[in-house]
Image 1 (cartoon, rainbow, N blue to C red):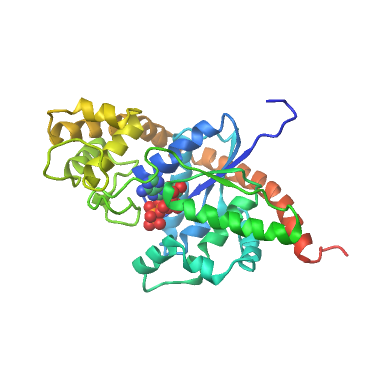
Image 2 (image 1 turned 180 degrees about the vertical axis):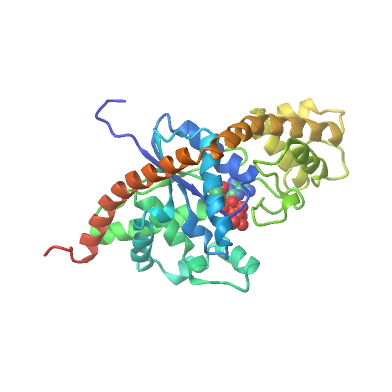
Length: 336
Ligand code: AQP
């Protein structure tokens, strides 16, 4: 790349809503580090998104720090990537408001995540939950993002982000870069261990997911208990063997082996052997991250420094887009 050529921008975020699981790791987090080589990356702890569902305030604060420690333990380098809390850059909320005015109720009503979460939290279907995609669009568009690494479940939200940006640009000129999703081929949708037809989710009961920070013996127990079928055949067939296929996706994602190779490896062997191999591979993948996490999370001064610097740098970048947006929509500057 020419020295004067600007690197493309990558943005992604994870909600500090609980224990990060293997789905978050395989679908998103583990893809973040390698992107730092080629792109200018921003990785946010999206705490404003988290409060669309009721949170315990003390726990939310702890979860934010926990998530930042995990980002760092998974290989994010604060000298190369911008790591910050979403709520420390008020421009996210400001742009989200503007974008709300360019987004239709019908569009938001079609979002699968809204429908799922409205069902899960029927007692609290708030406006924030409904407008979640416009805040996510603001996160992405504020930084003129080119690529958004996410799991498959977020594809629809990237599509609406593109629609909103194109609509805005059609009225006001080229204000926003149109982003594209980066979705991995394997493991973009890891399913629940107890119901492999549903995605693995932080807010489901503990035994349905493997947390990144689960102890090795807990991981082994959870894999052993994962739902499979009675055929005793390791074969990738999502429709008829969703449990086995899910474990194969996990195994493939952490070992790099293809599905055919995995099927051959376990010819004539039962699910017992297969599950032990899956557990071994997952433990081997997560143990080094867990060790780094224990070190990093104990260093509060370091975490504070990363958090503060990240917010300052992100706020500067966000201010550029925000001042353009304000000018375009006709909000008066503070100096006449
Ligand atoms: N099961 C999954 N498989 C692959 N990728 C996944 N992601 C989430 N679940 C899976 C990806 O992880 C990133 C962060 O997700 P999030 O913070 O938006 O929240 P979530 O994990 O999608 O939500 P959960 O697990 O259902 O928790 P709650 O209940 O708190 O909302 C995203 O890139 C997502 O694609």
